[in-house]
Image (cartoon, rainbow, N blue to C red; front, top):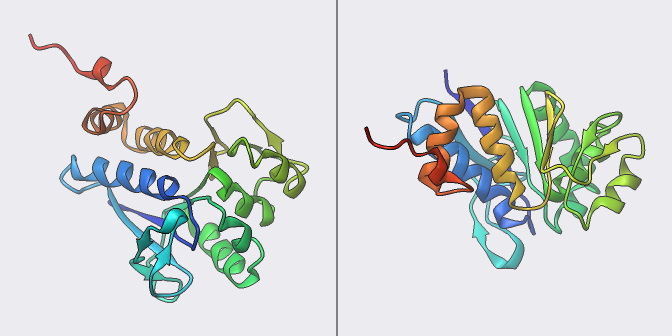
Amino acid sequence: MKKNVGIYLFNDAEVLDFAGPFEVFSVSSELQNHSLFNVFTFAEKSGIVKAVNGLQVKPDYDFSNCPDIDILCIPGGDGSNAVVKNETVLNLLDSKIKTAEITFSVCSGARVLAKLGLLDGLNYTTHHQVMPDLQKLAPTAQLDKNARFTDNGKILSAGGISAGIDLSLYLVEKLCGKQVSDTTRIYMEYGDWKKLIKPSP
C-alpha cells in the first residue's frame, strides 16, 4: 500500500531542503511502477509560496484539504524562524505529526520539532549554523554535531540542506529495502552510485 509523503512548504524555505526529499521519494516510487509513495506538498494556505532566493512554488494542498500523511517532511530555511512563532501553524503541524508514522526535519526545520518539544531527550542534528539556536530551543536534547542524520524511530532529523537527500534515501532503504534505495541512487547519480552497478556477466 502506498504511503503518503507530505512535504510542508512555507515562505523562505530552503529549496533543496524540500526538493531533495521530493526527488528521492518520487523517483523511488516511479522506478517501482509508482507503487511506493504518493508525494505531495502542502502549506498553511492555498496560493504561491516563495522559497529562498525567489523560487515560486504552488503547493498541492493547504491544511484544510491536505490528505492524511504517513511520512512528514519539515524543511528548513530562513522562514523557519517565522514558522516557530506562528502558534496556529505549530498546532496544525503538531496534529499532523501525531498521526504520521514518521516525521523528519531537514536543516533548520529542526527548529519546529524543538519548539513543539519533540526533540526533548532525543539525539538530533541540524545545519551547523543553526546548532546554537537549537541548543537554546531544546536544551534537554542531545545534539550530534557530526551526524549526517539521526533516527529516533518516529522522529528523525537531517543536517544541512543536502543531508535531506541522505536521510530520504535512508528511509527508502528502511521502508522498502536496499535494492530500491540503490536503484534510486543510481538513477539520481548520487554519492558513490557507480559502485552500486553490478558488472555485466
